[in-house]
Length: 118
Image 1 (cartoon, rainbow, N blue to C red):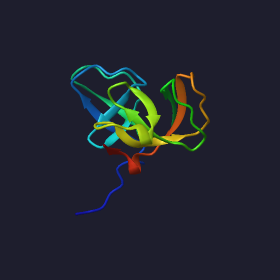
Image 2 (cartoon, rainbow, N blue to C red):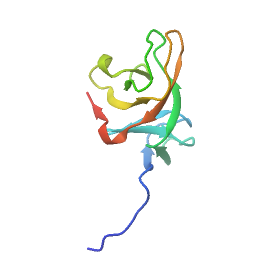
Image 3 (cartoon, helix red, strand yellow):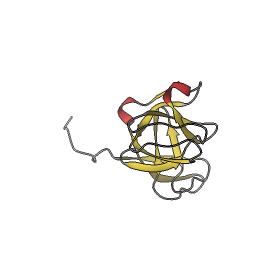
């Protein structure tokens, strides 16, 4: 077998059974990322697993730059990794800016190398 370069590894193709909006978090196995464009139901689209994204975050929680964040699958928002429950994506990313409580959005650097489903 010949080794060959496929791509840089910043995205993956996602076959979706439901419609996905651009900017939605997509969890595929133990890998999570952000849809770069809308994906139609029963369609295939691109999911980014590299970069910094502004995503919904738990309004009750403040955290600092570099905080380890999880993705709460059921609530569809960022939470502190220590608050992750069964089924959430642990080590989803790192906060690239501090977030105050009552703020409903946070900037996160995705960390696919260490993501895991709790």
